[in-house]
Image: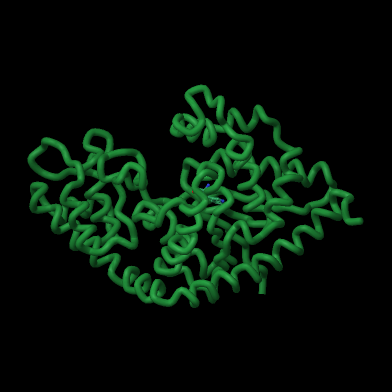
Length: 335
Ligand code: TRP
């Protein structure tokens, strides 16, 4: 049998995962696990690059993110789920890769630039408190991807510049050290349109209190939808440019029913918000019911989740060791 291609992706455990993660990336990776050798990382080391003052928060969410992935259908028999900090080879590779990237490249990286801007509180308006760790997280993420020699990386569009850096590092490494150690991985963008926050903000996020979590109860979900922002038009519509908030709700309905927003709109008809919102809540809750059921069962059995992570660690470690053998040889440090 031909060797299956490897994909690696991950989530920062800074909060439980929400329906933006779910429709945007979890469903995608769950679909891919049949075709690819799939590795999913709980990126706790990366979460610490902007939460170093809050290690407790990161630790708490490692388990939540693992639960969310498993509840969404990630199957431990097919995929490898593991915790980033338990693979020291990733940190080791980060050090070697650091020589292949200039500080200016990192400063110019659009992902870093926009995140530093969003985090004025943490890094100051001029970025004068930007840490070495945060500036360098794309290098560490390249190590996340390359430690298992992944061929492809399912991510959101905001991550493309980081994947581009990973490609450059892989090519540079191979060229410099004269061995074809790393594949040049490709980004795999999710096709689903991005879900906005319930307030119309570009992202669902915990700090903005505008997210529906996979772990929310149906009642909490219904309540959040009830208070979600709309606009002053009398009926629903789908026009993400002109009516972002309402279009976002229609999109959530469409994704819950597995249809396009246009078809969803045709099915719903010209209804007002107070008619539409309960219909949306019902559709979303129904769609999430099996996931939430699995989540409840898993949450009641923490040992089973620990076992999944322990098995994942074993499998990921095997990959890390064989990559490091190649790296050490290529870099003339296999003493
Ligand atoms: N940076 C990603 C995010 O914020 C999370 C992540 C960490 C990741 N390591 C990764 C994604 C490796 C893909 C591959 O969503």
